Length: 394
Length: 122
Image 1 (spheres, each protein chain N blue to C red):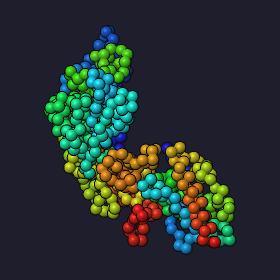
Image 2 (image 1 turned 45 degrees about the vertical axis):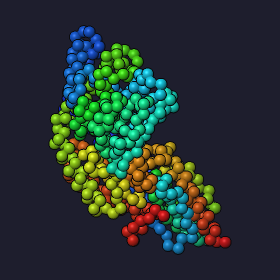
Image 3 (image 1 turned 135 degrees about the vertical axis):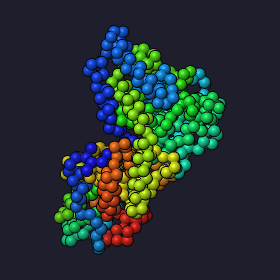
């Protein structure tokens, strides 16, 4: 059996989406910037797609800017706001669990643009404390950037509360909503979001296309210079098939959201409960209350995450791990460590991210394969005593 | 990223386990770094007649421990000490660059086990 439980890494393109895209590769291939009939037909599809996406987040169509994906959207939001700010001293507030597209960009801005950054901690459940944000705001604060939901352990952040504070203080609020678009209802006006990043391939759309929502009136510089596309804000030939695919995928995600969330979270809850009940020395990373419905992140004591991942893969189950070994660095996941999890347990973390196609049968199979893998690897571990059935890190 | 030989060694490792009355035990690494390799050796007339391992680590760490223990069985102590991490990597048909350190752990664990054996002989 093959089981794909890495939907937070990427999702399968929806067949309905693919069908919608195909004519725009071959028939309606014109450049939407061209004045002739070929171009006008493509432009119509782009305009309609922009409308659909705007409607899905309560925005206006002219606030939707197409990008190459989540990383570009994040880069643009941060660099663009810093470059456009006339303030002498520039301060940004963020969380310590952001995606590398935020973390690495902020490190760059600290080094090259003399921006000061406050990285807020998270609690055991993986959420920032709203009070910490209030306390960190200074006269120099130009932007707060906090992700909507975390990619590794699924913690949904207090976005409405953060948006409210930012609005009161007159500070721009950006959120990386790449992991949240599939399952969370988002209205940028209700939540007071000024900038929002998304990526189509996380909700069964195509790879290579994303959006940066920019509220009208927000001062932001361009990231990509060149042609006049995207109202002169983002150069590059408009990619009609990808845009059409993204809009269709988001439309389907919103349409089926409530139903999918209920089914997926029920599968996830049963799986987590069974693993915690039936496999000893397993720990849940993050809390259950404010969590993406498809995410389970568990640490399996005394064995290392990458070896679990490969063992599951040999049995046909695809997951991801926060161990150093799987990332190619020496440090385990900064997100899992931020929860207060010890290094040795962070090395043992596995993320299961379910999707709309996940079935009960697949989860049952995954459980069986997981239980056997954990036992096999513990037999090999110098930290675990099989006879006594206990382990120790000393 | 792993080749079939590495995956095979990980899926069906040889010489897994502890050894009662081992003549030498070498342990390298620690849990907070995500890697621990422990190699046990049994020595008769200066020849390693048996070797076992236990590993907390990634698939490459387990594969290299299996290979390294296999390579030293039947070798003299002096011959075992000439086994370098590159030999283990070559036997496995290559490892991803970020996994080379696993093979270094294997080499060091062999050396530590031999050192432990020698210190007990004095």
